[in-house]
Length: 218
Image (cartoon, rainbow, N blue to C red; front, side):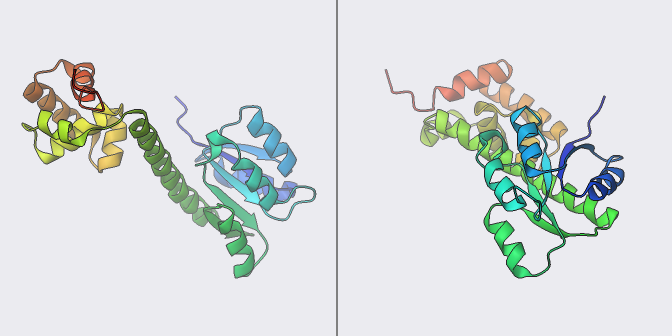
């Protein structure tokens, strides 16, 4: 099973594209674009990278312009973008960061440093998406914390944190990442929660706890 994460590299220099692909292909799936225009067409046609390496100085559409268009696509609003550039100096770096880039790498780059920076930004991008998803779930449900606390009075603080996220639709992996726990520990806590609250698994827990979320007394 292929578990590599997809990186889109955008640069008008074919040699840079070749070098980047050679450096990254053992660790990531890599898609290449020779211009900002081609990158945007690929993204609109369904290419879904988890991170974008984007050159600043390109003929036609610059990296700055490309990034602005990327951020207009809702599905890509949290995708980390790292600028690849030969420019040096704080002005170019600040300009990219102000537009929403997460990092800035000056060419030529070293493989180990490049891969380390990519992995760091991929993790930060994952956390941002998780936070957005949880926020969206909370907006969908008018959460009544006082009722929730009353219904979960038998639970410990850790069990209550897990129960809250289960009610909001998170799976064990989401919960583990969010609370910095292991998935196995989350699974064990979930079993304890179900027993204490006398519900039949995740569905039963959600039905019980979501009755505490914005439902008026009848």
